[in-house]
Image (cartoon, rainbow, N blue to C red):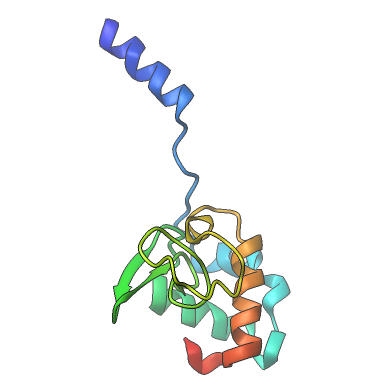
Length: 123
């Protein structure tokens, strides 16, 4: 009984990061405002995100000496800052862990910057 109460208190004091594994339908609803941005259609975004992150906001992948975070697989090399790469350019001016929750607002903001600077071939 005592360990249950301790576990309950830990769960209350340290809530889990809210993450989401999107279905393609949920993702198309959440990314409506990305439709057509930079000439990229919503079905293209869905396809890109399905293949890069599996539509999982907690996806973290090591790739050629950098780490990519979240749904859009945003790299710590240029776009965000983490504890692994303190010399990141951090063009999106954000901590990489912000891409691991279910709030896609900052993810989409950074994805637009990447698209403006690198184009869709970045993904």
